[in-house]
Length: 307
Image (tube, rainbow, N blue to C red; front, side, top):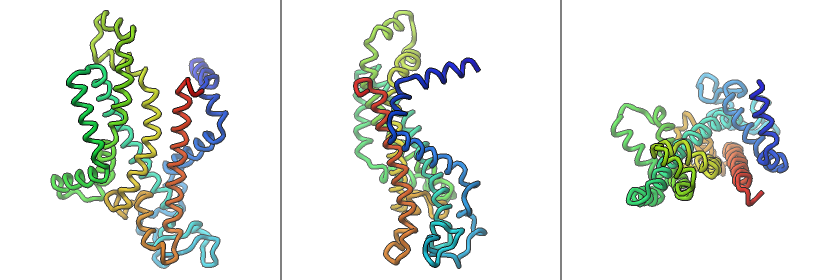
């Protein structure tokens, strides 16, 4: 308990905590992000309906408008879609999938990018040139093409695997594979600066291996920019997943994410059922905006020149 109190005291007395509490916009963004995460995790408990259980659906309730309309129903606050699924419940479950894909892809990109960036910046020479050229080539392929390629390969290798079973893994892998170059470039630049400092030279003199120097000495000193890129990369990954799902490459309609919900609602936008696309779209925009605001604050908080 004493150790926990010391850590809490250090956190609450830090410049980062002061920067966080002094910005109302950042605090609001943090509250919104936490609300999305908690709602997504607890979706099976707080959602009025399980939109993915056919037994809970009633086709007679399809296209029910929001509750403030004359034809609205109290138990469908935001209305229903073409299958009678509660829009509020689909947003909760859809946010769950979008956040899972976004976090998974961002962590995968971070692990690949940080590892290659450390290796490239510390080793230098031909290996550095090779890794950076691979990064340049990777940046030339959008996530959409990577996802389509990987999906085709998965279907060719595992013909008995349905899209419902493989879609989430394909999305995480494709977005993660296409998102690692920013991490690698940033870590490479920071590593090239750190490798010539005295503490790295001292570690070499006492016989520390290159892997130990990179992992235990250099890595902790280059993680600041990585956290910033990771926060902003989370928003980009969520948006990329939504774009892929909207185009039909991502999650299937049976287990929709926010992007799939927007794609489904877009078919009925001009027929008057605007709520099917507007509410999921608004939820996606608010989530991405909140995460981006947190990323901007973290960039400023971790940069002493901007404090």
